Amino acid sequence: MKILVTGASGFVGRHVVSNLLDKQIEVRAIVRKGKESFFKNKNLKLELISTDDLFKESADWFSKQCNGIDAVIHIAWYAEPEKYLKSFKNVDCLVGSLKLAQGAIKAKVKRFIGIGTCFEYDLSGVPLSINTPLNPLSIYAYTKVALYKELSQKFFERSVEFCWCRLFYLFGEGEDKRRLVPYIHNKLSKGETVELTNGNKILDYLNVCEASQMIAEIALSDKRGPFNICSGKPITIKELAGQIADIYDRHDLIKFVTHTNSLTDPECVLGIPNHGL
Image (tube, rainbow, N blue to C red; front, side, top):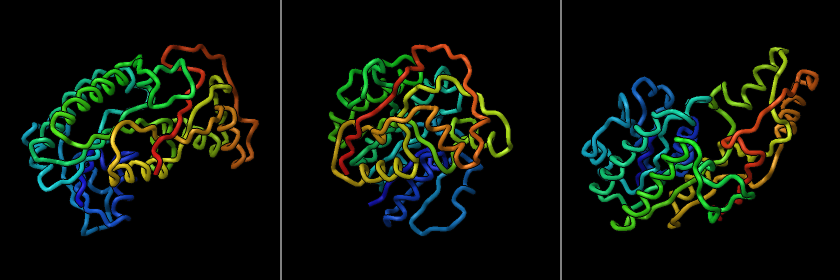
């Protein structure tokens, strides 16, 4: 079996590629030019494809990359912390992803795994199952839902097996330093005060290593449909910060400041796992 992975040098992508290679699966990994160094160790089962901008490539280019591929795991997307939720770059990702789908169909790919987000759901209800109604409130979530719906129809018509993995809150090796967990680590390691908002907010956190394992196993299975990539275990921001503070013995540096809720920042985001693997 040979799998094409987009966003292969990203936070999630590099772990998915590692999981597949550990399982002796052949991988064709698409990375942005200049990111090839993420894969320093040569592996005969790994083929690297570089591009200046994945989402500006044509359907024919994608068809060429999908030649000889059994399954696609499409992870690439714009995800810059503090910007991605409202950025119109999400539209470019949507358009480019549809071209990838066209290329995959033309190349007769049998299986396609897309990556979604928990923000697709109506977050007013908890816990969140795959049957929870969708109600995207940001352009990021809206474009993910649009892609999910379009691919569901397109791949059904062409008998392509389609899976959609909705990611919840991930942490771990390779995470952007601006995200919550590395931000807390960085501040405490320097003996600096950590200012956080809404310590009672409940989230569903999962290590990226476990998440990538789930995604890889779904790709290698014959399952179809949507999946929640989550732990199903609630943890408050205060508890999470406390666990990290234990490492440095600096609970005195954790401070909580006034917080105003917004529609895209709910009090609780907790998933129900359904990967069943």
